[in-house]
Every structure is written in structure tokens, then in C-alpha cells.
Image (cartoon, rainbow, N blue to C red; front, top):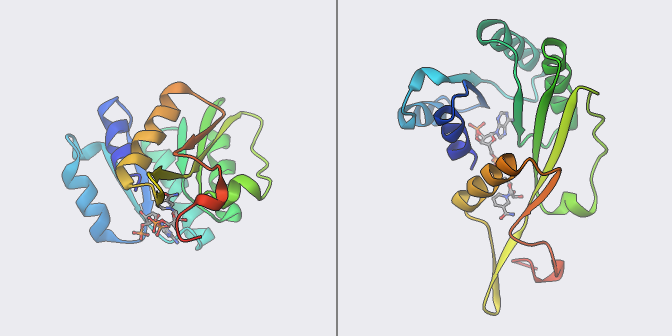
Length: 169
Ligand SMILES: NC(=O)c1ccc[n+]([C@@H]2O[C@H](COP(=O)([O-])OP(=O)(O)OC[C@H]3O[C@@H](n4cnc5c(N)ncnc54)[C@H](OP(=O)(O)O)[C@@H]3O)[C@@H](O)[C@H]2O)c1
């Protein structure tokens, strides 16, 4: 759901390292990039903490410090590893943490390093007439791009209220 965000980042001049398990999905993403050399695939399961640390450190050593992280990692432990590593190599950086709607009401506290500017992006839902639905991948990607452009500390894509109107409730 964040592949369009990765592609947009390459278009505005970023080199992007993408974490995911499926080599096929990585391949699909690289094929869509105008400059495939700007996408660096980190094929791994982020629950494998030693591999996560190893591959992210290698990516930094090969491509330079990471100035922007867009995370859809629900695991706090895995995100802590990424945050600590990124902080070691750069003075200031930004973390955009994309979260499901439930986390707006009940979330773990993430202790971000002092050199990190942290933003939360919550995925809500859409009400259409007397029905509601979850967001499409396009809506999610567009909302994430807008949040990055606006540099907002907190944003909601779609809506979270009234919460009891969410789909399948
Ligand atoms: N509010 C809304 O409208 C809305 C809309 C969409 C989704 N969501 C929320 O998002 C949740 C999951 O969405 P999804 O199914 O699209 O996402 P997902 O299955 O969590 O996958 C998202 C991305 O993360 C990667 N990934 C997942 N687990 C990984 C792991 N252990 N290690 C490395 N990479 C991993 C996936 O690639 P690989 O599979 O290749 O690893 C994929 O690129 C839903 O349950 C829902 O709560 C909300």
C-alpha cells in the first residue's frame, strides 16, 4: 500500500530502501520505477531482528545516512532497532509512522531518539452515503504523501469519527 510513496520519493530525488519479505513484490516495484537504481530492496522479515539490523546498517553504509523513514511496522521492537540505527549515522531525521485506526485510541508509547522528528499518520475510513468502507491503497499513498509534504506531526487519512461507523462494525 506504500509502493506509490516509494516511487514518489524516487521521483523527488530520494534513494529508497524498501523492506518486505516477497522478492516478487520487490521486483514488481522496481519495474515501476522511472529509475530502478534508486530502489534498494531489503528482502527480509522485520521480525528477524539480527537480519534487520544487519541489512539496514549495510544499506546505510552503502547508500549514505537515512534522512526519512516511512514505517508501517506494527512491531515496536523492530521499529526501535531501525530508529536506533538511523540515529547513529545522521544528526536530524524524520519518522512518519503509519498506523491502523485502532492505534489512534490505544497505542504503545514509542520513545523516539532526540534527533528524530516523529509524525503519526492514522488510517481511517470513508463514509459514503449510509455505508462506510476502508481506504484504498491509492488513498493511503496519496494521504501519506500529503502528510510528508505538509510535515504534520499528526494526520488522519479519511476519518476516525464516529468510530462506531467504521466498516464491519
Ligand atoms: N484503514 C484502512 O482503510 C486500511 C486500509 C488498508 C490496510 N489497513 C490496515 O493495514 C493492515 C494490513 O494491511 P496490508 O495487508 O496491506 O499490509 P501488510 O500485510 O501488513 O503488508 C504491508 C507491507 O509490509 C510488508 N510486510 C508485512 N509483514 C512484514 C514482515 N514481517 N517483514 C517485512 N515486511 C513485511 C509487506 O510485504 P511482504 O508481504 O512482501 O513482506 C507489505 O509490503 C490491515 O489489517 C488494516 O488494519 C487499513
